[in-house]
Length: 342
Image (cartoon, rainbow, N blue to C red; front, side, top):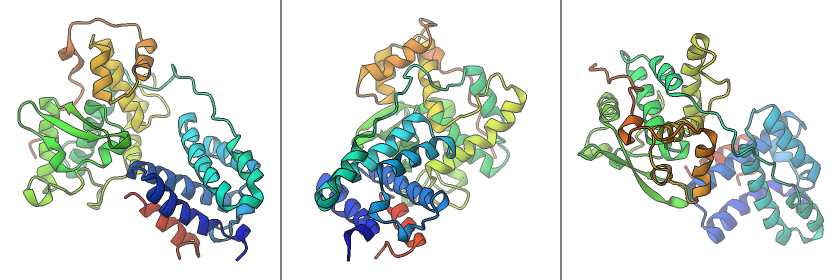
């Protein structure tokens, strides 16, 4: 078999031998990389008219990757930060291929030379407290699905969790005894504890009762699920946000930006904490930032600091809980990639 027809084979080796076997990457990294290659296959099929099982190594050129990155931003509406994450995955594969495809090392080095796009670190989308309250108030609490959506979005905001942290939560990670808290597992499997306010606890408890997640038998199941009872995905989380952002935007377009993401909830929580006078060290710990420089972005974004105390951060934003050979076909390739790290 000629090496230039072996793209699917080497993608498989990259995931199974290199990422898992040699580097031992986290499940989160594995999922992120698999999503990147699924998107690349979509690009090759939709834009280049090359189905996944016919993509060859020689097709993966410097220009192809640049076009792929442009497509991610313009057609898939990816943020620059997301575009850079996809590029990092492609670069990791290119680095791996330098050792397997030595006859074409220049091809892979050309991809490695593609620069990360500069991010305006002080520019990000977040909601004001009024905007967050408006969005959450759109969620009905008189239906089982509505209470599920409220639990998901209220938890996303109040905990400051990353999307990947939220979808990987289990009922056993939630502790309702005083002081109530949740255990999150972030980047690099780092563990952190975040406090949960009483109102959120009531919402999550009701949701767990609705979905029979409050028993010992279900303690290790996914905490947040889709309407079919399967584990919620980050894509599903983004969809739920869009369901309620749209009607809220109609009511007050000045309060609801046009491109909200799960990370916008995290940005919003950080800004609201700082605006309420919470020490930036505490904000760093709640968000799980390794570097203080990351947290300082929020301090630079808004100068209205020094209000009374931590309690002022927990305004009445959340409604009360209601009392009621895997590379031989497109589908096989993509199904296998989606399974990685899940």
